[in-house]
Image (tube, rainbow, N blue to C red; front, side):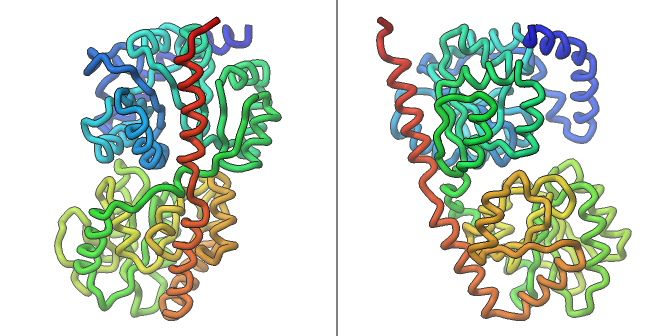
Length: 425
């Protein structure tokens, strides 16, 4: 009965879904494409190879799969890897990372008819959901179709756990249907177990296993040459709505000489909006997409490109990780640490609580409380080369010390694959 009521609620939401896709498509036209896939209608399969299916919602989840996908392709070369996504930016990221080596489509909305069509069309031998993806009808349909499901790199914050607990009659049976769950931390595993999940292990965080692409490191050097080697560069990475106004106001009050500000909004549809904000604060702006040397009088470079965050980290002296100044929950700081860039984070990092805490404890990151403190701290670091170099070294040690999650994930996958191929008695 709970699942029936949940499905009825989804049907009531159907008109809103179309409105939302259209509305988002006004700024991101890719939301207007592939609507059929969102309801279980797909083009023909590209080959007849058995499929291993990975679901990664958006950019961060997709980027985290790099080391895992490399091991999957090496271990199961006879299989086709199918990626499903929810957002166009996630889909674009898989194109950048994997090209034609994988097939990619949108995961359908959680309507019973749509998820059944998806599973019967692709017939995956194994499904892998990343992080916190608990879609009740999808999980039920996978069980009905005999598709084993894994939840890997799983995270469950205290806030999310309270939300799931309110709908225990719905979520508990769904969690119990997973063949296995491998969580990022002991706390994540305990919360999932308390919610009713079985077969929960701890694997660590796949994001620690990511290697900065050499091409991005080379691009970072080229960007730094464009920015000017005689200026310090302060990166504001993955900023969210409302944060840029606070940050730009504080930056505008900094005494000269100021560092060059490299501002990279989280969502590409906001590039024009953020450029307008920069101009409103009477700061001189240049877009990275111009691909030109940055004049000394430019205050802010707007990072209006996709897939270049590693290059931005490599080009910066210090990086602030957005989504943490206001209560969005923060973004991934591991990529910055992986290239040895010292990190500043705000108070709101509950989506990456464990990684943020460990980074601060390791001396790879510092926590600030508001925009003014951010620039005061950054200025102090930029004028203290010894401290800056120590943080850079600690950042790389921090990442190296927590590698190994992809190997643990592969062991979970291999057990599930072996079981799915074993003859039933």
